[in-house]
Each structure stands twice: as structure tokens, then as C-alpha cells.
Amino acid sequence: MNMPFSPDRCSLRIADPSDEAAARFIADHPDATLFHRPEWAQAVECATGHRALTLVAEDARGVAALVPLNIVHSPIFGRLLAGSAFGIGGGILLRDDADSRFLFEALEELAQRRSCPTIELRGGAMPEGREGWAIRSDSHANFARDLAENDEAELLAIPRKQRAEVRKGLKNDLTVETGSGPRDREAHYAVYAASVRNLGTPVFPRALFDAMLEAFGEDADILTVRHKGEPVASALTFYHRGTAMPYWGGGVWDARALRANEAMYYRLMGHARERGCTRFDFGRSKTHSGAFAFKKNWGFEPEPLTYASWTAPGHEGRDADPTSDRHGLAIRLWQKLPLPVANRLGPVIANGLG
Image 1 (cartoon, rainbow, N blue to C red):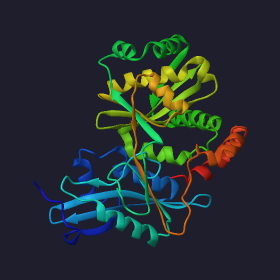
Image 2: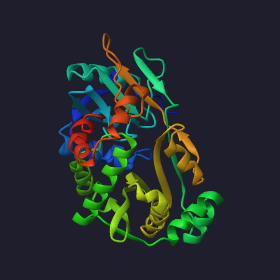
Image 3: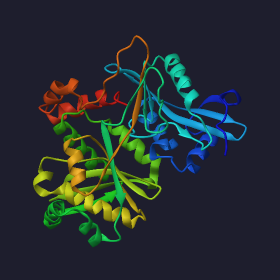
Image 4: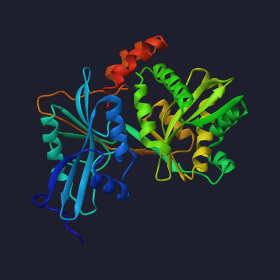
């Protein structure tokens, strides 16, 4: 049995996301997620200016552990050292014989040197029992399952009530387009911006979506549902190790009556299958939210996500969760903003959410 490596024989360094040794470690690691990939951190830095770096631990055998990071600055929410900003995963990635405990001390020191009073890690090794850290597994859940063999089997895999809603959407006068060109990007941003405004949250900068599409190339695209030529639902999807992950998606007000979201996700499952995917990751939802119930209705089972956060002594905990009780009034006011105003102000705020 291999013994955990000793911190005394391990060196730490800060690397760029493009570091070859770190990139090979990620590519070969069975637990590496979409959010560990260098493309993610590079796209975030390119679009938002949040510095991307990787904390790498090495010993005589090579890379033993790493965590991709972004230094997020917000005039509203303060500074944050985030494990893969704007991601829902991407925490500490360990070699099978590695011990993560000393990495948390290194992260705390790094955060303080970079004037970040908060650290957030989403998944990966957790700082069990370490002072100053809070761990939660009850705030968000992920939904993923294997794809069925064909379209008909996929439809039958959906529980009866939700299947009826999907069938209604498929009978409507809806057309589907996929791609990543200017027309696809324009439609997606228009729909997504309207969707999040209606939910009361600020929209991310369009530059973030453009940078992700450029960075991931063939591993990302957009599927848009149109009604009479107008986009009513759209999703930007990533493809990672045989899994399709619709990550930023939504629909306009008319999408509900048209069952456009139902049609979109069903068609996206077929599109993913055509691309050779065998698994569909519906993504993260806040526990017991409307989105949480929507995904359960499709027959997906919630998988709790474990997150860790650290707050420097003498500082208040950072609260940038747009769905938290603290921001309830702001959400209600945001929902009433004219869309052009929300689209102008939203990216300035959302850029600092991390």
C-alpha cells in the first residue's frame, strides 16, 4: 500500500493554466472535471480579467496535487480566491497516494498574499476539521444520468407527466438550430439574458460565453429553439469525456406556453447522442428550487454537491449567492427592470460573482 507523500518532500509552485505538467496531470486524472481543464480558467481570465493560476504540489514522482484558481475582484462582493470561478466544480485534484491537508494552509497563505479574505472550493478534497473553514453539502445538488439508446427510449425514460409536457413541445411549431457562430451566439445571449432577468439575477458578460466557445472549440456549442423564427429557448452546452452538460440555458416568457424548454432539452439529448455522448449532466440547482423540481421531474436524481469556504480572521463571510435571503429585495427589484437596463447593468455586477 502506498503511503501518503510527505509535505517535507513536496514542493509547491504557482503555475499558469497552460503549464504542461499540470495539463497532463488533469488530462490523465480520472476525476478531472470540465472545470479543471485549462480552457476554463483561461476563458474566465480572458473574458473577465480575473487572474488565472494553478497551485501545484510536486514530489519525486511529478505532480501530486493541484487546484485551478481565479482571483476574483468585485467592488460589490470583495475579493475572492475561487477554485475555478463561474464553475460548479474544479476543487483540489489529488494523486491516489497524495495528502491534501497541507494544501489548505498554502491556499490560506496565498489568499492573504493576494488580499483575498475569502476562498471558495467547489468539490474535490475537503478541509475536514480545519479551523476557519465551513463545509456545506445541503445548498446545491447536481443531476446527471446515462443517455438512452435512441430518441424513443429517451422519451420513455422520462416520467409520464413530464413526458406529456415534452410531447406537447414537440408538437408545437418549433425549429431547432445548433452551432457556435454569430447567429447562435446572438440568439443564446438574448434568450439567456431575458431568462435570468426574469429570475431576478444579473446576466454574465457576453464576453464570457464567447471566450468559452472559443477556448473549448468542438467541445462546446449552442442549441436554440425558435418559434416563427424568433429564439425562445437556448442552451450553451459543454462536452467532456462523453458527457453533455448544458451549462447556461433558459427561455423567454413565451417558452413556458410553448413548452420550448422541454423540447430543447429533449432535442439536446438526441444531439448529444449524435455527438457520441453516453451521459447527460443537467447541471446544478439550488436545493428545493423550481429548477431542482424541474430536473427531478425528468427522472434525474439529485446528487448533493459539497463546497468549502474559508474566511480570513476578522472578516465577514462573503455572500454572493443571488438566491440567498439577503438579496431577496434586490431580486424582486431586478425582475422589474426593463431588459435593456438589466442587460447594461447586469454584466458589471455578475462579473464579480465568481
